[in-house]
Image (cartoon, rainbow, N blue to C red; front, side, top):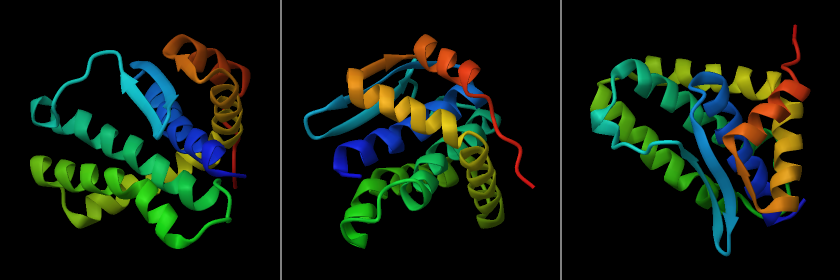
Length: 154
């Protein structure tokens, strides 16, 4: 698949999860050396409630799940580890700030896995659009979510 499309899938997972759980995606995009997904208003984690931090943990975990399940298998494991290293650090910060247990964090990971599975088509279509346009806003991602609703899995 290639690094660029994998980066698009990674950020699309963050962005779809953010729109589903919080509805506050501002913009996602590609830069020369990476990609980004930002809310409308960025705030430090220590200014958020535990309820919001729980949702942020699912959003962060969604990209880790996407790296492991949707991204190409070319490249080595160290490349994937590098791609998720910021996410892992962010999850550690969330756990420390909110005082979440390891079991709670595992629950957020499970919720993220279910979200990625249900919204796989929307994540893939969003990644394709991001790859084509280099930037998408929250409204564009919402339209893609409406066009590609979640799939039920047994």
